[in-house]
Amino acid sequence: LIDTELLKLSLIDTELLKLSLMLTELLKLSLIDTELLKLSLIDTELLKLSLILTELLKLSLMLTELLKLSLIDTELDKLSLMLTELLKLSLIDTELDKLSLMLTELDKLSLMLTELLKLSLI
Image (cartoon, rainbow, N blue to C red; front, side, top):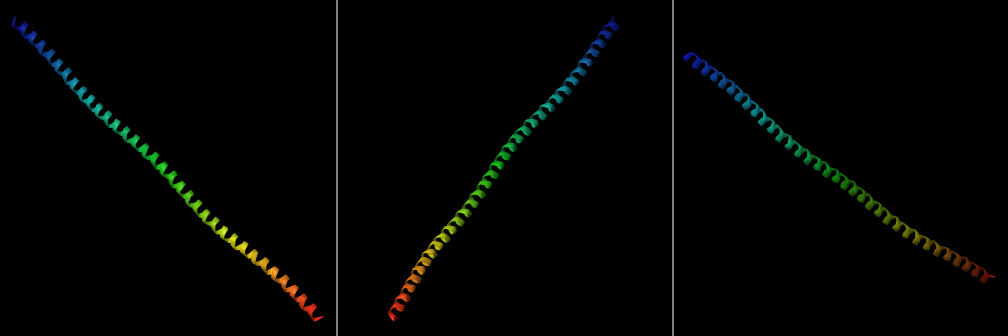
């Protein structure tokens, strides 16, 4: 009877050891699961950083476009200054044409005066 009880106790002890081993395995799996959750959180943070980086790249592209527009605006300002200078030169040219007409008129008057002098000498 004692042997039977000892055998039963030994079986119970064996079952307890099996349960203890199962519990140990469950704890190991729980630790692995915890590590996987940590990795998942890290992955989520990396995705957030990737989104932030994407937004920064978009802003950088916008800034580049703004700089291009600024350069175009500067070039337009230069062209406007050139146009102003051309207009000034055109005005000077017009004035020179007027002076040339006046000189032509003076030449005509001088010819007329010369003719009058010739007539007066005759």
